[in-house]
Amino acid sequence: MRQSKFYIPTLREVPADAEAKSHQLLVRAGFIRQSVSGVYSFLPLGRRVLRKLETIIREEMDGIGSQEVLMPALQPSELWEESGRWRTYGPELMRLNDRHDRTFALGATHEELITSLLRDEVKSYKRLPMVLYQIQGKFRDEKRPRFGLLRGREFIMKDAYSFDMDEDGLDQNYDEIFKAYQNVFKRCGLDFRAVIADSGAMGGKDTHEFMVLAEIGEDTIAYSNESDYAANVEMAPVKISYTKKEEEQKDLSKVHTPDRKTIKDVADYLNVSSEDCIKSLLWMVDDRPVLVLSRGDHEINDIKVKNVMDAETVELATEEQTKEILGCETGYIGPIDVPESVTVIADYAVTSVVNGVCGANEREMHFENVNPERDFTVDRYEDLRFIQEGDPSPDGQGTIVFARGIEVGHVFKLGTRYSEALGATILDKNGKSSPIVMGSYGIGVSRTMAAVVEQLHDENGILWPTSLAPFDAHLICVNPKNASQSEKAEALYNDLKSQGFDVLYDDRKERAGVKFTDADLIGLPIQIIVGKRADEGIVEVKERKTGEKEEMSIDEVNAFLRTFFSNR
Ligand code: ATP
Ligand code: MG
Image (cartoon, rainbow, N blue to C red):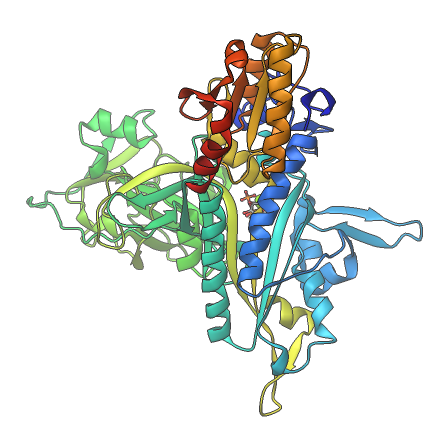
């Protein structure tokens, strides 16, 4: 492709609103342009990268026998009513009316639509198992669209759905798709982890997220420094058996703690460590008050509270609720002498406290020398806290380290949540009817493109992996006005093209500096520079990623490229 005829509007300035490196570089290098917040066009270079990524995904999905479909973005609201999500999905679902005042949603995801597609037609077990997928635009009115392609309001997703007779079938499909996803992200050159995730509102059981390690990531991953254990920090269990401090129990006493509300303030004031403090938080769990205790050096994880209480909703009690239930403001509440109506649960670590400190349910007062079980009772001890860096890994191997991650993929065992709601049933061998067992599997295609740039760039621009680069090589004619350079470059361009290489040929009448800057910014894996030594038949070949340069005869370029690309 001749660059003089190819639309690559590069920019020298960093766009003012672009925080993420991937956002800055994709805009500056002429891959994408914003339309409105969270909505982007893909320019020719960007389209090429997307196409390559889509091809990798198709190869891996087709490779496990999955079949591609294309479903509409425009979905009737009735389907979402049937699943209940018209109500529960909230403002993220884009809703609209047609001229007859019929209501629709723009697809945020396609569980409803695909279930409705199969329910009337797939009736016999003989048709299963089946996996269908599509690559298509999704719409979500995100509260905070940001970081360019990383969190858009219209974005490209590959979504897949598996259909099985039973859980065993689902497990098998899940494993296969899991492996296909690993292959996709490996082929994209990404450093990623598959992490255990929260099944949350989707209502399924097993679920994993594929996280690309990057500082800009919005999720925290807890992983082992020795094994391949990795979980979303929200999900990692804490597996420690705590032992009590070796210390004689002292007499309980009440102390005045003027204006000392936080654990740190109280611990400093009473000259104890935060480990010796018992933190008490009052939560409303499905509208019932639950006092949740943890050690002062730990944080309570609301997802764990929700799970152990088997609750729909958990929320911290308001100041008013706290006063009404415990007769005291937050900051001074504690587990001693709480009303019967309040359930008390505690994180296991609380059992290690001897002669600790806790709130006295009285303004500006705390207790000292508090001993669990002697001074207060706990209804249940559970694992309730967030895992921390340095904790032992839950699989017993190594210790936990944190990293930030970008979620690029999500695999999910749905079970019969949607098939039951929408009435997609199937007859087994004995003619017995049961709901189809489903799984749902997403890859953020446009987000993955940005995640690659987030990981693979330097101060001069993007470092595309060969698998996704919009072209294989950038052929740069330094001075097209020089007849020899221009002739040699043209000939090499035609030769490489005929050998099957995809070459971006910078034949523009621009200054050399502009061409080199643009080439580094765009980031094709190899640059071939036809310059001063063109007369002698010598060109310079630069590997973009390492910056290594090598002079070689024009005749050698072909073989060089062949070796370079076959090693990748
Ligand atoms: P997030 O927690 O980041 O909002 P999600 O849990 O809502 O993601 P899913 O519903 O599982 O995401 O969607 C499948 C995949 O689609 C995600 O793994 C992610 O890669 C991608 N994705 C989700 N929301 C967006 C978005 N707003 N912009 C770009 N990609 C997205
Ligand atoms: Mg989301």
